Image 1 (tube, rainbow, N blue to C red):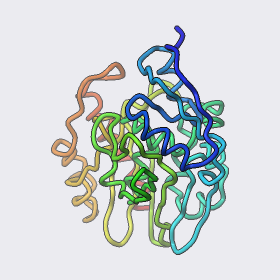
Image 2 (cartoon, rainbow, N blue to C red):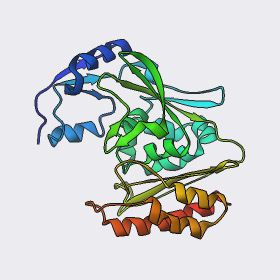
Image 3 (cartoon, one colour):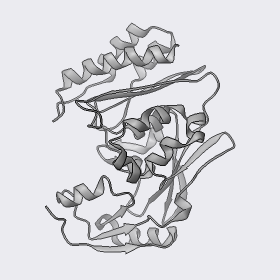
Length: 274
């Protein structure tokens, strides 16, 4: 199939992007790497009147570390992040997860900000951001603001981004020396959407367990977190019956997803306590 007709503008500044988005509201979509949006356009599951291309905005690129926070620009492609020594050092959970995203060709074009903004419930990066207690930087018509990952993901493909907002970067607190991280996902084939996945971190204050592919958003398993904080792995596994309520989808039925989530928790817990 081919997409419906649309207008296109390649903006030269962040301010220009915000103005274009605010003017057209829900009829406008941002395009950067295009690895999610272009297929939706071709299948006519998305039909915006205007595409706002932000690919030339240098201020949305780059990886930096300052004041105990790792900042990753929205236009950093996933392949660049995968090779980043700063990410490996300060956000090792991201380094574990990035090779699981699609395939190399997709990671060469797909962006960090695009994955977070799309908020696909089966995607790796939203779950990692939540598991690390990260933040999202947003620029909109009313200025700049920062939203905690815990407050960013609202519902299926729904986030705290408004019609005139641009996600400009994500921020992640640097991993402490005592932090342990773990990651796992189960899919029919490498690169397919995960039937179930888990991004996890543990430090002296407790654990954060975030499952993906099992709900309409990344899901923090808070009862399991409380059990795991005591070192009770099997109690944490049992608590997933309260934390997770996966529904059937084209990849698997809910009962299988819950079983896979329990399997992943046992595997990842071994990484958190090594």
